[in-house]
Image 1: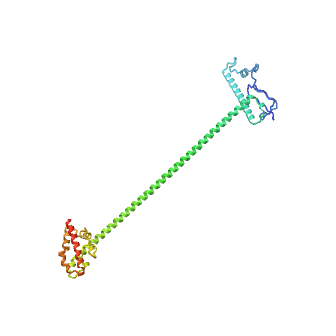
Image 2: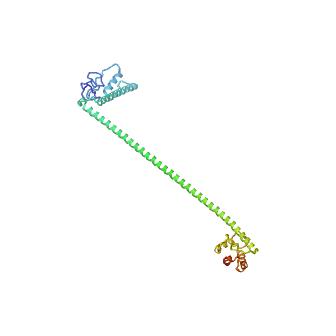
Image 3: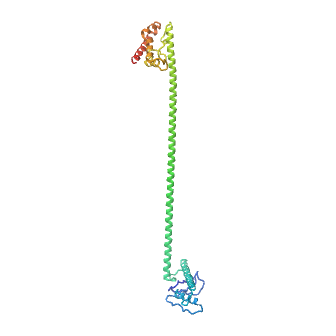
Length: 323
């Protein structure tokens, strides 16, 4: 094991080891502690020709900070105090440097024998090492706590971002659904409008066609009566101008509703009232007055013509009675 020396700080009562070489010392001679042992009296201050130096020596070894009795200059005394202060700082830095060297030397593993170190210094070093370990542990724990907090913060931020994304997607989905429902509603409205327009157009066309058909049927009806009364030829069932929109083929086709649709239609005879129309029709279709036309009917159609005339006469009487 390489020889080394451990020099305790100021006022130490520890022994001086004979091993002197170390990574921090280059001499091979035993070095004495630069600090006096406890109880050592201060050295005798010899007189010099420099009062300032004498006072400095006295202050250094006695610890007195009072000025020399012979010093009357305040500025000189202040300079002395500054000199003493700097000397003390120099000694303090030297002691601190020695402590750090011994700590590094101990931690480097060069000390293998417990007896190589003073007991008090070993305890102090162990306490210092323990303090450093505790500090390192606390620092690591604090860093770990900060990392965990940062991890939780990032996780919470990620969850909030995810929640915002889900909410935005939900809002976009709702917006698309609303747009789709609105488009469907508009389509239904447009379709209904189209159907209504088609229905109205069809109704209008039907009314127009019906009006035209009624007008044509009425004109044919009037022209048929004029031709029938002016003619002297034999007549068949289909030659009679029946008061219906379409020509009947048998008496059963002559119904009250068919008679009303033509005789009381608003598309002709606008200057005649309802009663006037019915009265004019009764004069034409009264059985007694229509009997003279029966003599011109073909024998095979006479019975059917009489039945049809009777249906029309009864229908007109009912309408007249109802007013």
